[in-house]
Length: 534
Image (cartoon, rainbow, N blue to C red; front, top):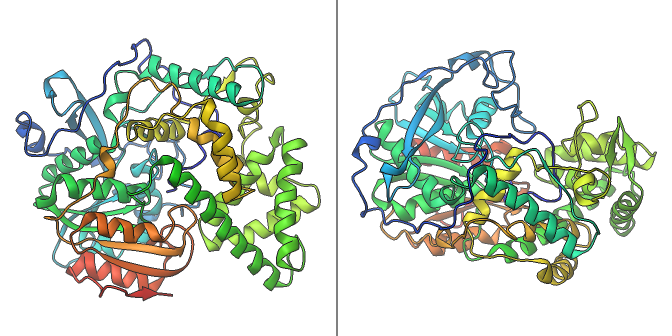
């Protein structure tokens, strides 16, 4: 569910290839079409999904891997015995809402019908964040966490355009890396990746932005027969939900936005805020580690923090080999970041760091998401250090989708000339996380289609108040973003504060947070402003 997830820092092999091969890059970017304007879309809103049992290729529905090889979300519980009750369907939507005659997309949907005997409340649409994450995989892998809501709601999710099973972004399987290691080489590699995306997915790239996905959600609302959209979104899903409220205030229902993105910050400011956020939570982890009495990095806060940074420098210069895979500084930082999303992961991180102290990087490899493979999993070493391979691996498909959606959602285009300042400011924000986040600011360098900032306009004065859930020590979406979002919405939305660490409070299982969110979604009862949970 993270916002910026280090799309350069962690490049993985296995991107989908050839889905739109040979399509030339688009040269124009569409503008957002006002909700009340445009052509007649009745044929889309009047359709009814043909729900069928999900095919065996979907995760959790049988022994086969998913159709595109996408694993369930990291940390997801195994699907329950009722996994085969999941129903799948496709939803036809215009590629370009201003010109629906120019082609359509088929959005992959998943549904878990309501289980309880009480009055059904309609559908609850769930978005896990990203951008780039598969909502289908997420719901199938995590439905048990929404079982109470699923008694009265049909739980519904979807793969947004460009992700998962819905017209996934493809940029080929590799590219020829540029020589050198400086900012110019870094920019050249990003440009080569982006040019490949234009060649393979150029006709899709202008249409994957958040405003278009919000329009898809309104088609979905109508297609499932709901007068209002009831919605639970995490991280990037909070931006999607707020854009929906802005675009369709009269059909916005009960919206819960958990781990709220800050609409007042641009991409650069968001990167700095995230570096600070991860550093703050890492410092909390260091203090907690010392208090356990069995901390593998030292017996006082200062020693632990120094050791954490020293290991990053050491692994950057001298990577460890684990099962044929290099565990370098990038993998180390990514393992730290992944573990800081939930306090429940802290014991596993302590164990991995104890292994690292003894010269074994297996635990770090596992936490970075590259463990368990046959040696083919990449930690980004070849891509970040050109010359080790003739062809560097493309980012993974979800990382490509993140890039495509993010670049469509911003007009910012930073290049090699901006990198020294990015590296300086981000390193000041966090000497450990900043250097690894800084390269992501070049993700849109040479991107083949323009972007705009329309998704940052979330004013929704005519929409009903939403419930915003914010965690005080959230590394990825800092706490103050929720207050900024509430002011930007301008509709009396309420902030529920969770005093704790981690990203996404509702899935953490905190009883207080769950009770407040469930009361709103089930009964329409908003907590009093200023309410907190510990």
